[in-house]
Image (cartoon, rainbow, N blue to C red; front, side, top):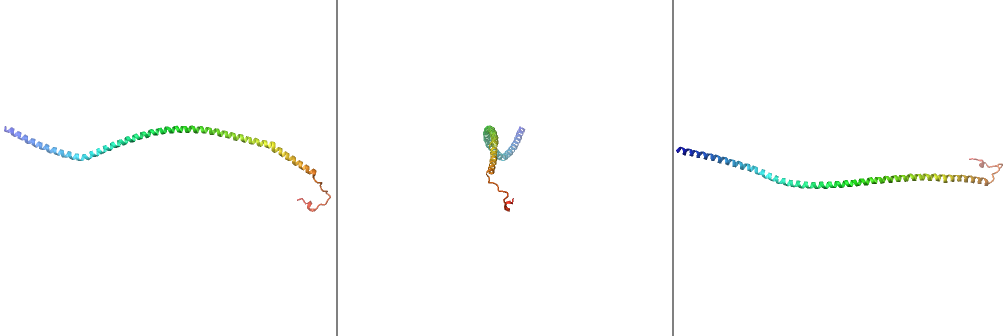
Length: 170
């Protein structure tokens, strides 16, 4: 029995040493965990802050996405309105161009007709008024000369003596 008591006592001593070793190891592990916790805690705070910022950024991105979606919708509507207006303006311009072309043709025809009428009127005036007026003027000049000859005073006799100045032809 004695041996058993010694073995039990040795076992208790070994167990006490093992428990002390375990207690020292656990104490060291706790100190290490506390030091790691002290170092990790600011990182956790930073991660929490980043998480909050991430949530805020997510909310802002959601708002921006919503605003961009609305802006894109309005831009598409505006683009469609602009296309319609451009189509109307093209139609107006093409119809205006056709009308202007017709008016230019009409003015050109009017100018050609007016020119032809001026030429015809000039020819008519030339043949019916100016040429007969010249002929009448020539006839009248002939009649006038004839009347001057008929009613002229009698010529001077050649046997008269003329003064030297009268004889000068100059």
